[in-house]
Image (cartoon, rainbow, N blue to C red):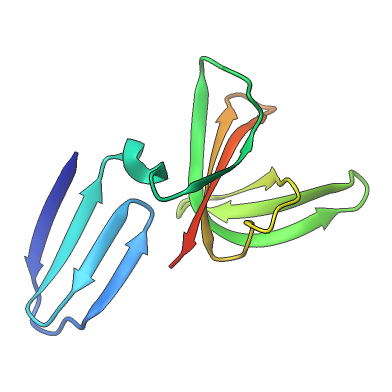
Length: 125
């Protein structure tokens, strides 16, 4: 499902922005915002981790990678994403796909002790 909204704005510039599933095209006469269905947001992302576990009740966290770090006592490599409302940290496998600024989508279990099921990585803005 795709929706297109157009807002007139006289001082807009020619820039393309990408924020999650929302795309905006700024030209001299209008601002156009293309809203894509949330299910379509992984079509331009690469699956970089799959636990191959099937769970009935899962949740998704999606946003820009803001930080890569290492927890020395646990021995875990981690990445942090900012979804606009909050930041969340996740363990990351050894992969060159994890770069600050790229989009990440994490499918995980629900509850207090969330487990990562799948991770997709997309391009940077």
